[in-house]
Image (cartoon, rainbow over the protein chains, first blue to last red):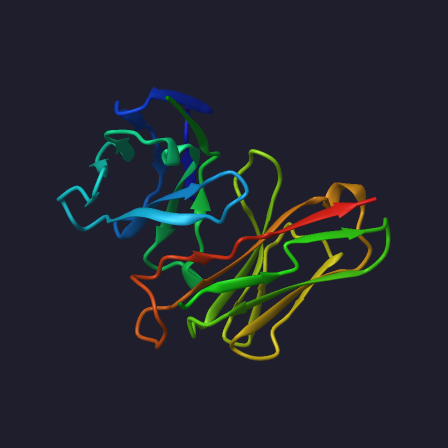
Length: 116
Length: 119
């Protein structure tokens, strides 16, 4: 079974600075997808960024980018120019390309605090 | 806007009194999921529907049931809520590749959740 580990329960960042969240996963498969989801306090979970394992290029979405290291099974998220609205729980998630019904395996989450 | 809607947003029930949470979607996705999320924890998948096919997770208690009368709606029934069932319940949807439905490449779209309190 796949597992996803987020080793940082909480990270603090100064507004306008950069923070990097770590995520490692364990799988024997070669074809899969990785996601970062954001869950602000009392608000719904939204997709931040997605990476297909077969793509070597790291995904980028505006201020959010990933460092995908397939051999090391690492998938970190970098938030640049942090804003107060970035404060949230961030979950890393794995999905096998063969997963029935697109089921996700979540990491335990990292809480991001943004200091003004 | 296409979305996942959950009603009610807050639900209070009494210990042992059956409760139903609802989810609807306008994305025309063929997969719908129910998760339980406790404070500061990752969502825990309870079950999902792939079209009309119900898929239960092995560790989901029998106390939790689900119904999906049509593509748009899915319900979570808790037959006899205990204090340990107090949590946020998240509904999500997804489109399996090669099928119709709005949205990107197979990611799950989440509703705002229903916070359940058990007295």
